Length: 235
Image (tube, rainbow, N blue to C red; front, side, top):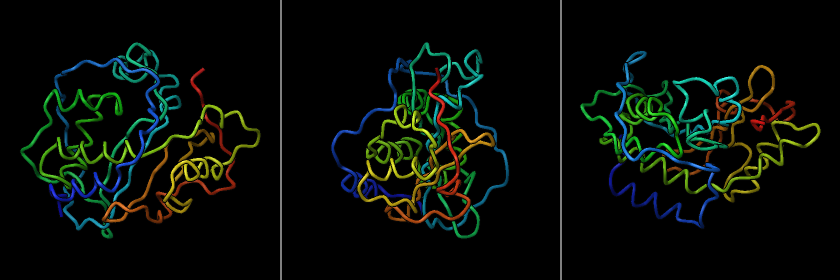
């Protein structure tokens, strides 16, 4: 089931709140780019959508060691902006494996991609997310990005730079900080993913089919509340 125009109007009304706090500390992106080609990786899987996952990557950790990478220059060089959380992707879920790589002749334009770069600062990431995930949700790339942005703009961001300085920080405290800042969310709907060394990599927010916060399953939930955690500030 793809999201209709009426569904977007309903979604926009549902998440019309006060202004969200931006996670791009600075952002200076081009107004148009040449979209790269997204090569299909894995099988086509067209299964009924049962919910959604919003994956939010913590940019300072992702960029650690990638500051000089040409492929990651938009996000990591510092020349185009400084970022906290970035939008990794909005993913449809299913009870029979997640939908992916749904056949489509639609491709994002350079303007479509450029408009996303302050929230997803990678042209390849923006194109890949449409091809793998968005194609199973909407008929047009611009619609997929619009849905993702409505959700993105509904979040209020805790001060994770300050939280990173807490002694004995745990995954549960990272989770609770997001819940405290965002009415309607509970800890059961906020996945916290740490790398093998215990550093924060990503939040995964779980939604039902109507984009209401829902309980995450074990794989999306990530670390348990008592897991020791660290947050890299990029300094």
